Amino acid sequence: VMIGTLVLLLRNFMRSLTQQRKLARMRIDLVNNITHEFNTPIANIGLALDTLDRRNGSAVQFTPDELVGIIRAENRRLHANMEKVMEMCRMDAGQLQLRMEPVDLHELLRAVMQACGPVLADAGDSVLPQFNAPHPVVQGDRTYLSNVFFGLLDNAVKYGPPGTTIHLRTEGE
Image (cartoon, rainbow, N blue to C red):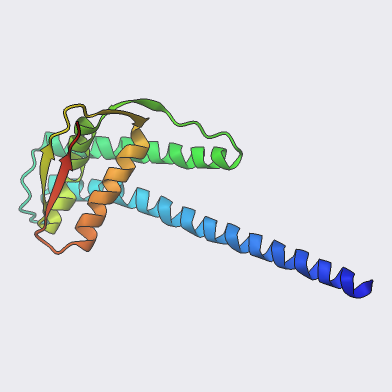
């Protein structure tokens, strides 16, 4: 009887330990995702400010109004990402709600390309847009979709060779 009880206690202990490891991995993944989502807008704001300040000798040619627009858009993106972090906390409590709305992917992609302009220029990269989808409007959460596209462009810049032309294409029926 005592051996059976020890086996049950050991099995429960191992199950609990496995659950704790899974939770620890999930927390690490969450921190990594949050870091990635905040890194890009912070880098874009920094590059836009450097270019606006003109002290860094950058050859990037953006008008001050374009740079202020980028800074404003990235600031809104940081705010939206903070909202998403708070929503993730609500999701853990079983209360997540996506803001589903019609989103024009072409419009969203143009905004992402503009916001990433300083990062692309700094890396010597460019984007070749080919927006061929006849019906670019989809139902989705605008912030989550923009984070996906920012992440893809950011990774293309980060992991591609300098001077890369990034092809961004939409298609559909």
